[in-house]
Image (tube, rainbow, N blue to C red; front, side, top):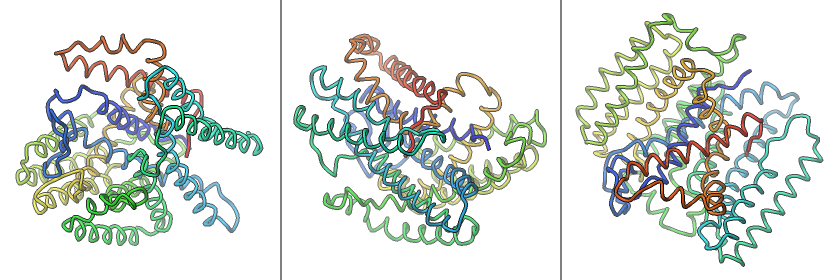
Amino acid sequence: MKRYLSLDFLRGVSIFGMVFSAIIPYGILPAWMYHIQNPPPEHKFDMSVSGISWVDLVFPVFIFCMGVAIPLSGRRRLDAAAGNNISRSYIGDILVRFLMLWLFSYLYVLLNFSTAPGWWAQLATVIGFISLFPLYLQFSKTTDAGTKLYSRIGGALLITALIAYGHFRFDEVISLNRSGIIIFLLAFLYLFGALIWYFTRDNLRWRAIIFTAILIFTAITIPMGLQPKLYAIESIRWFFNMEYIYFLLILIPATYVGDLIYTRLLDEKGYNPAESSAVKNQTNILYRTIFVYILWLMFALFRGHYFANIIVTLIFTGLIYFLIKERASLYKKEGITAAVLAFAGSIALVLEGSITKSPCTISYCFITAAIGIYLLILSDWVVNKIRGSYLVRLFAGAGSNPLMSYIAFSSFVMPLFKLTGFLYIYQSAYPQGYPWIGVLRAAIAVLFTMALVARLSEKRVFWRA
């Protein structure tokens, strides 16, 4: 069964957004170019600010992509497994993947010495990036077990030596609290989400019950302010965050979408939405309607038009469902799921009074999950419209290699710029007083990074937890 290219494409777009938003000019762009709760020019975190921008979408969209991928990879592994110990083997595989992701959230931080002065720090960072290959490289099926074992051990020893070198040479702090929060959260979300999917993979009713239980728990604990209170306790912050539970409101619906897609991928001809559409040449209005609705959501949530959003959401989701039913019926179940999530999120937003990423609100989870479904449908359209183009290969290639894509700029490209002197050209490409040129520079830098990763993906060089 072939990979689902649209999912890789959307994951690549979300990774682009993560890296791009972190390196755009600081403090001088409009508020919608940053996290809404970190407004310019000071960028001080303010929990009282309501709303979301495109920057606040990239992380939940990535969570959504992870949720869709869980059944796709899980079903393949279960279908290929044999014997009486399938459950034990699969659960063990989930735990190993979790531990490797959790470890990665520390390693890429502890191996990045690029903020220290001197070219030795940059060289050590580049070597640190390279040292992750033997530990996380996905070997071919023909590679013998001994080679894999020696590679992993060698990588672990090299990484340990580099972290020790950074500690004594560059005064880098080694601490349980020094982890990359994004990967750290994703590791725990994967653990809980994969286990929930596994035990409910053939029983959607139980998955719905678990989802409802999590929703009730979230509705009770958010008004109590437990998430920020617990996160403020440094002694437990390194292993527990209430958002592990909250963000499952995005991931669990995504696993349902993943189940639907897996069924379609089993078709001998593969999954081709363009060919499956009832009226092949008349679906553009559907995709345009979805795109306009997403733009409305972003405008309404940024401007605070919460009551108006309920009415507009009813109109748009009804229209989208009608278009899906008439012109692209294969999206029928996804359309219903997205409509329910979008409307429930709009109601929750009025009841909660605000929509925020941190602390996470129910409306934030529901609405971003709905947007994730709609973006995946749009990704189908883009991939099938320009299949084989470099744009699709670029984003899908980087999206199929997410761990590498996420850290390649900060751990490889930027240190390399400093070592080669190209940093001066990079800095001069952003003249003071022209912030949008700085935005363009950031976009080019991230696209260059993604092109490197996509090239490795085409060569079948992948990092896997």
